Length: 194
Image (cartoon, rainbow, N blue to C red):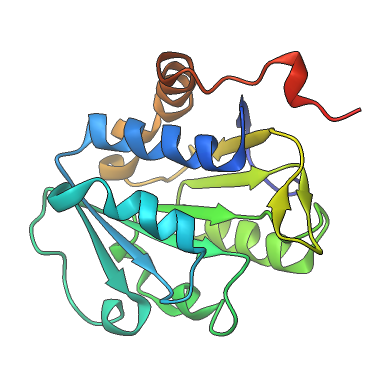
């Protein structure tokens, strides 16, 4: 992705396995997570988040602009989903110091999308770590995967990043790679469509 600082790409067996591995990794590093997400984010992503139970709290975007974290030990993540109908840029108006990580599902956008560029520029300028997740083989007209390949791109701006973010994001890519391996969701040659 153009404009990203130094980053690492981790491939997984599908887009859902990529985001699942990332969430498992985050839960290994943190006791509590708050995810700010649009109400109409991709239903399977919401279902995945909800399956983690009480350790992960989903905050609707509308209510997340003003409240403080429930405790200081909570990590606040903004989930940007390319499939939302409206209000996509709403999270970009949140106070930057209230965001610890942005997860951006870029599945519905072409790699050179202006939206991807705008979000990556905002995250880099705001010094917020960014994880771009993607299902690589969607049939856009059907909204289903015809092959099984996904990825997580982890980009952490190192310069001037607040220590409270840098200490746990430093190993985020390596630990996500371990989660992909341990969960058995690594891509195999059959994952690649002909």
